[in-house]
Each structure stands twice: as C-alpha cells, then as structure tokens.
Length: 382
Image (cartoon, rainbow, N blue to C red; front, side):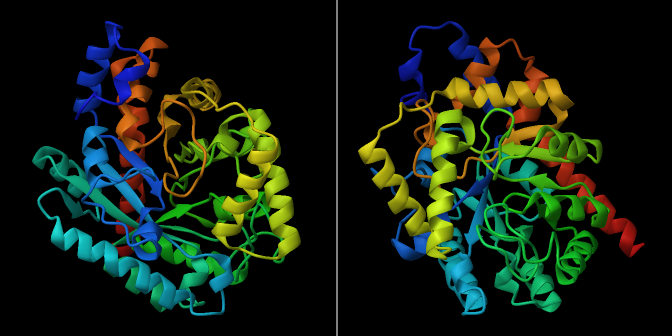
C-alpha cells in the first residue's frame, strides 16, 4: 500500500501514519465496482495503471483494497433482449484477467477465501450480478450463476424488471413480483446475498418480509442527507439493521451531497422521459447539466457525514463501503480513485472512531453479514 496519492491532502498530520497502519491491518472491502463493464466495452487491461477511470490492479494495491466485488452490470435495455448473453460476455474477460494475473488477484467465493487472500497479499475478487433480468426468469440460471461464483444479486437497476420495481421507475408490481420473491427465497437457500440497492421502497419491504437472511444495500447512502430516491430512508436503514443488514455507502456525488442529489433527481427524470435504461445516457445527461451549471465537488467529509449518520441511527455494526467506482462519473475530492481509500481511514481516525469501529466499517461488517447468510443457507440444507 502506497501513500503517494492519498497523502496529498494531509501531508504532515501525525495521525496519517497511524491511519496507514490501521488501514493495512484491516480487511478493506468495496462491495460495488462497475470495472467489468469497462473491461468488456472499453477493453480495459486491469493490470496496467490507467489515466482515467477509478480502478486497476496497481491502484487497488496502492489503496490497500483487499476485496473488490465486481458487478456484472446488465442495463435494463437488455431485459428480454439477450440479457443473459450480455452477462456471460461480461464475465469472460474477468475470468481471463484472473487467470492472467493470478499472482495479485484471485476469485473469492466465501468469507474464508477473503481472509486467506488477505494473508497471502492478494486482492480477492467476488462476482456480483447487477440486474436480475439477466436470469431471464430462470431459477436454474440463478443456481448456475451461484456455481460460477456470484455471491450477491441486485434485483433490478434503473427500470423495473420481471423481479422487482425500481426506485427510479414507475411501479409495475407494487414491490416484488411473485417470481422476485421466489428468487429471494432461492438466494437464501443458496447462500447468495440479496442486494436492495436500486429497488423501490415497496420492493424493499417485500424483500424484508421474504428473506430469512440479512440483506444489504451494496451501493446506497442516507436519504436523510441526500434525498436521492436511490438512497435509503432512516426507517429502511433501521429495519435492515434490526435484521442484521448493512448499508454499504456509495461514493457517487449525487448520493452524498444535497445539491448533487437534487441534480440527480433531474437526471433520473430525463432518463425516464427517454424510456432508456442505458448507463451512457446517464453519463451524457450529467455532463450536459454540469457543463451548463457546474456544482462544487463534494469533499470526503460528505461521505463521513453519512457514516456518522448511520452510526448514530443504528450503531457501527451496520455500515460499510460500496464505492460504485467506474460506474459513477463524479466522486468527492480525496476519493478520486481507489488508490485514495486510506483517506477514509484517516478521516475516521480524526473523527475519533476506535480502531475496532474503523475495522468494522472498512470490511468487518460485510464479512459478518456474509457469514450470517452462509449460516442461513446451511440451516436450510440441514
């Protein structure tokens, strides 16, 4: 782990050395990255440091990242139109990269794998499916994706699909569909984590009624601070925490800062008018709005404010990090890419969080939840 980039915003603070030591000791987990999409569509070579984007192996190592959940993101525009084919095409370059760079990164399918790879000094890569429409309505496909190595599924994206309503689309099912509920129950049986990011509020409550295991939001933040519909209300965070769940906070500017959240609502409004589910339209609209009326870049303290809020609301056992790197276009100063993750540890040290609390936030809470999901699955098989 290098401090070359991240130390630039606090070069002489005596707490920096302590923060780096703690960061290196902790198991640092990020539950959401769209890097696989960049690997497929932009032919990104993750072994080489690149000038744009947020992630590659060199910068992951610099930032002391131990585990990266890699989202196989399937845009809603593929629903009913080769969605599973798109998922297969996207996961192939991930496996190719894992084969080519086995000395530094390896597939992980369990919490024990993550702990082992931490000791070996390797990055643990965990597969995640973002968009349940990739299953094309098949429970068998869900089982096969689990066998391949997928360990959580985001039920939908910015449009409703055959499983669930979306937080950014008009309702179709008034929550989860019957198929969506069946998928959640099968995920519990398999030991696959259920991701409630992107789904509507009604669908969220249906998930909590349906799931026998704790659930997580892999890349959402607190709606009380930034009123984006993609964020979670205090009531939702509390209900999820009561069942052992975790909210993994997103680094996207619209998820963190009130003014950016208001702009995010306008972006979603325009996307809804277009009837598109494509991520490139999201980026295009953001760029147009920010060019005509630039907003000040949020600061790392905006992320810390969300951590503080969740900790005050439900305690330190229910919050973690889900950057959405290489999916979001705008992030806070000090978190410009994955190499700057130690800045979070430093900021938490400055806020007075204990070492044990910081280790939970950086990854311990996610590991605990995953272990609970595995226990639930084991009970169903006993």
